Length: 263
Image (cartoon, rainbow, N blue to C red; front, side):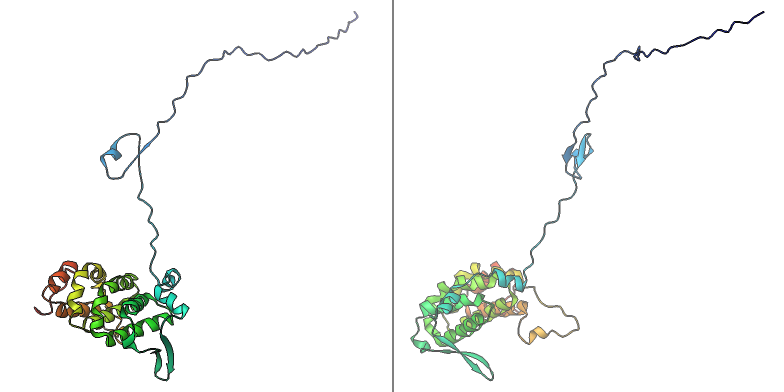
């Protein structure tokens, strides 16, 4: 019996893939609620949907440095007059130190012009301006006498500007000048009493600024640069030479001051 062989052929037909899944519309997702910033340690910080704020950033503090003061210092009227050559002074270089010399007689100078001008130079911290101004003020006060009294109102702003520099050397020099000014005439002490509100705020701010060196040596005493001690000395001079109203006006501006007569 003969066997008949049979062969089968197959074909593959590509059809697109179809899914029976239906598209379902999704519900919109709710966005997270925005957090409300609230201050810390408050009742609002216990509420929902709040964000406790952190501490504020510390701001940079500008410290007064001598070098920085040199760059930011404004030119004074004294410097302008000196640069123009309008001041009747010159420098003498001696073996014991530099000293200014007057080209005219001091007694013939107009104190209404030159005394406030030299007082304006007390704010200077550069050489030769500070040297001319400081020695010039001392010479004018020592030779002034009664000619200083009419010029007192014009000296208040230059003295105030010098104290407001907060430069320790400038403040100490100005305090010593105030003492010399008050003792130059009996009329000057009472004349300064109405101007204590302009002059004494810096006294109150720096009265307690003393150097606590412990058992070490304070070499600043040699140059008399202890501003706290100078303020006490200056206040005592103002009280002694300012008349009967001096103490109550000093006490109003410097509450920690004690009378030199009571102690």
